[in-house]
Length: 246
Image (cartoon, rainbow, N blue to C red; front, side, top):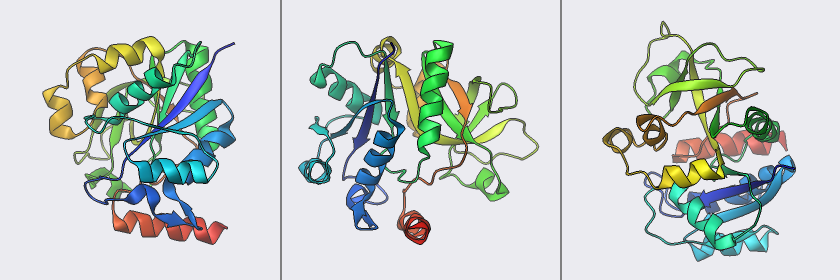
């Protein structure tokens, strides 16, 4: 049997929207919405990794699990690796890094990525969605991933680039990158021991560290684009959507 651990890095000190993990939607914090989506996927234990006691207390109060980590991590991946070591859970094969600011992520997409990783014996995997609005191609807040060929629901293709830059719709195989990663434990250990690359730092995309060091990232097609909460406008938009649905 293959065992997966879901870790959700979260912190209060976001650059563009400080305190966003505890913003409420339907009277529940964003971080707790993410936790519950991860639990609904039912693929393994779920733990929030945070440097902030306020986040930990909120997660615990709402029935979740959390662990305090150091406040000097440069990336979320470094944070989840510390959490993994501290938790000391045996026999974990894959660690799924779920972003703490995507409260409407589809649980089926989480399940699908985990299945692709296990069935393909892949080292690193992530998700991407079809771009339905060409404005996204020119939005630097939207991370795009380019794949080796066209994605469909049955394949798990290699990423050739990740970028925030403006892209032309003439370019082929461009998708909206969704901030979720699955790592084989050995690949995660390898990744966090690599130095940050100039490409990664300049573009503020840690996945470029993997590509710069010839680590392969596979991409699965998501059913839908989840909305990451980076700005107040993002928060108000997702709040409206989720509260309307309820």
